[in-house]
Each structure stands twice: as structure tokens, then as C-alpha cells.
Image 1 (spheres, rainbow, N blue to C red):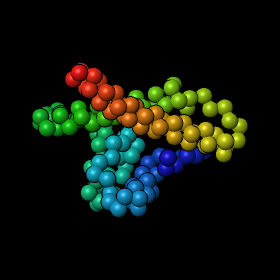
Image 2 (tube, one colour):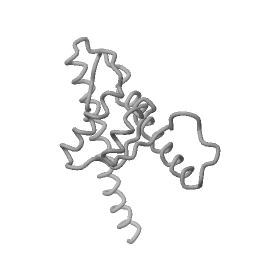
Image 3 (cartoon, rainbow, N blue to C red):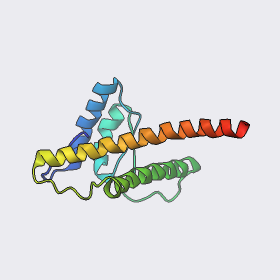
Image 4 (cartoon, rainbow, N blue to C red):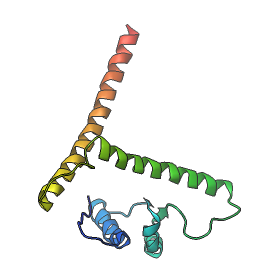
Length: 142
């Protein structure tokens, strides 16, 4: 989690520090950023660093889009839907919509634990899928 604030702030201001933190951790800038319209204020920064920023375009939609643009827009929409779906899952399955901690630090701990459990659950599903697919394959061969 890059930024957690209990005060109102403009989210578009946090894109550049988040991208720079990513570069410090991984040594390179990411190729693409899937972003909401509010982050599109940072187009010049992303272009400067060779980052493709995807998401809903600003302004009036084009009348004539070629096949590649339509396909890319469809792929971007699918990826954005997956991200939004994960937000919904984190709220319902992992309790991020039911945080009743009174202290700021406690609430942050609850949120971090929910993300930790989400990651553990994903890793466990991958491991179990590999284990059972191997087991099932051996069972069929007998």
C-alpha cells in the first residue's frame, strides 16, 4: 500500500511518488499504468518516462477508431474490471468494508492484515491448484 490518508486529498498528486517508489524497488519504470481519469493529469510525466497510461480518455470520444484502438480499449476495460472486482472482493470477503477500529494505527493494521491475508489466499490457491492437478493427472494415468 503506497498511501493511506484519513484526510481529503487529490489522488492525482500521488501518482508521481508512487511511480518513483516503484522504480526504486524494481530499478525500472513500469510499462503501463491502468488509471482513472483523475490520474490522466500526469500524461506528460508518463510520456517523459516511457509509461503508457491507459484508462478512459479525456474529452469527446473519437468517431472513427481503428481495429487496434478498439481492441486495446477492450483489453484496458477488462483489466480495469478485474481491478475493480478485486476491490469488491476485498470489501466483502476480507472485511475491508467493516473496519471498526477506533485508533488510526489500529485501522491501518487491520487494513494491512486484510491485504496480507488476500495475498496468502492467492498463493495458497496457486499451490493447491498445482498439487491437485498433479495428483489428478497421476490418478487418471492409473
